[in-house]
Image 1 (cartoon, one colour):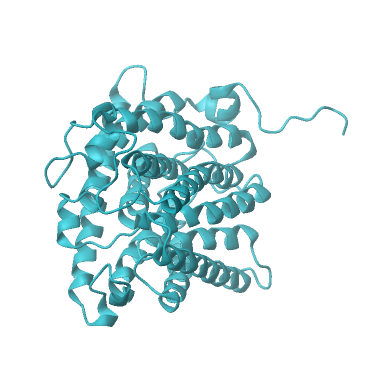
Image 2 (cartoon, one colour; image 1 turned 45 degrees about the horizontal axis):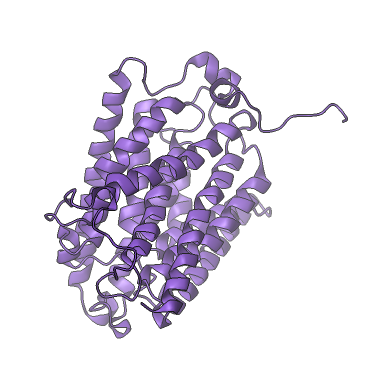
Length: 407
């Protein structure tokens, strides 16, 4: 083992976990004030539920020995993994890899919740977490990141989760919003803009562990991933900010800049181990434009993706995955490069990964939710009176903001 890499990966794992509370603030601020607690709890409970699922059987399905589609249960309960076993091809313990990957499994279903806030039954969500991570997340992680996975063998480039995390969550969000239907009073302004900006800042900070940690070592590749991650986020934030300045006739939206930064972070995720800083600038600019336009177009549809999960994570992930096939640089030594290096075939490989992830995630999520909706005692949607009251009180008996009467 290399003590420097171990120390860095412990830090990176903590950074990725910290992203989920950041997401909770980001989503909580975008929700209406009577649903802030419930929105935050959706992310927070993912930390609890998925952590247990991951060590019991999730990791084994994702990274256990198996076939091209999913791993077996040979590692159930992490049996057979010693505390000093070293992960093949690295200088870190296998258990540290388990921890790092757990944090990705935690945040992915939490991302979906932006599409279902203010109307999804909390108890049903807990059951959904268990099933979705088992049936959707873990198999797709196996496809892309496990040595036996069919997309891994096909040569898919996804350094830190453009397909596994963002496209997966973005498409699942569409399926969930489609089944749930619209909120009873959609289109209300965010309840707490400072929460949105704080949440985006925490996400930006934690994303350095997300991307720079995905090389599994403290080395030059991690440094470059750190640099391009920050560059793409900054470029997308500026791009979205300027577009909002134009649309709002001279007023730059704080929520817009924060959302743009997240879009840039999403888009650079699959590319962060393969591109240089100039490629990152283009990817960030593209994310700012494409996700901004997607948000405007989605608002014209009947789909109530409440917090724009597909526009930011779905479109950002698709753009990032395809852009990886364009801007990947062979000089980094971990790929044959992309279109700019004359490897046009990488674009087709990336496109196959995008389509496969979208298709499986959408259909599987739709089936899971349809089954949950017909099970007595579960169902997907909260009662109308609970929606009108607000899910903070209805589901948790607590309010986000309580006046002490001194005002």
